[in-house]
Length: 260
Image (cartoon, rainbow, N blue to C red; front, side, top):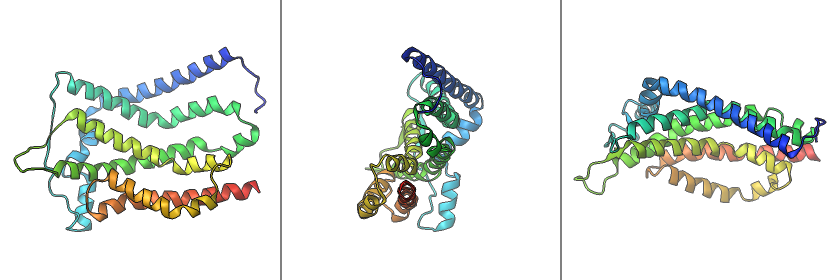
């Protein structure tokens, strides 16, 4: 372990409490910013994928007439007295978490770091940067690719033309948040593989052996995340995830080569 002075269990709890307080404070500050600037964060960002002039829909129309999305057959409504206020609070908290994520992870890393050996600390240098970078890319991928494709399919899906899609604001926001955060976590695959390779659970040989299985899983996940039946939408999700898998194979091979 590092050479820092050993602390008692109570001292560790006190240290953890202050890391937790600082992390929550950062989320709170960014959440207040999102709460105050609701015209941008809610009207432009949160409601963005519900509007036909959203960037992704424009790009799909430029890509091909087959992928052009010219209508979103739904309207967003509020059925609860406190619904809009609670959504204002909810989206502010989630936005605060996303924006404060690098700092939150840094606080977690500062707490965990003293428990590691010097070699392990050196091996994990830059962890905050890479975890935050991958999380940010994943969030953008979820927001600009996965969420619009899913919202477009679900909004235009009808059992019968007599049924109107009137989506409650709670359902819309929760779906958007789930897809965006899920992609942010999914993009941590290279980091997870790096850690698992360092402790000997995963090897590059195992990942290469089960590559075909991984491709099938990726395609299944892509089909679930993007319920749209067209192949283009599923490939838009599957290709970046497969690229992450191949990157993870390379990372695992690098880790094992360094350990020899």
